Length: 217
Image (cartoon, rainbow, N blue to C red):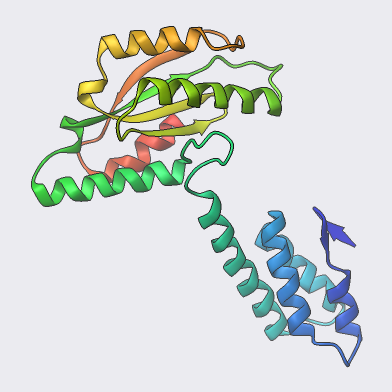
């Protein structure tokens, strides 16, 4: 039996074999599930079914859950910074970057919204776009951003069709926006005319989550 490529038969067999190490088998199931992206509730369902009709043993449940959590943290840490294909930052990374900037501003007595902003790129919706096309578009956008912004800016992909650049307010000018629009229009493939705007940052760190959530809708 499998779920999303996860082989759970080994745990079921271990439960029925008195010589097997059930906890070890449960630990393997939890770790493998995290690698495959199987959610924790499915893992616990599998453990429960493996012991049916009896109640699952607590050590096995705990081993599966702990192994899943540990592997999920490792996997998340590996992918949270940027996409390996485009090198664009992920949403968790740009949020962490913003939090660091706000903490620094708090220590110095400044306001981040007076210094930084987000330049946002949004492509039109397209029902015909598939995964490969979206990946190629993200790669094209990344190349444009690297060519235009050569300082310490942070580039991120927020959604399949929306991108953002964390810049200083000095770079968020009409001239920069016009040049960005021109470069995007010259991309080798036609993705439609994107909408560009400058998203002002909140006055305090408490508003970051709301801003990013709105941009990621």
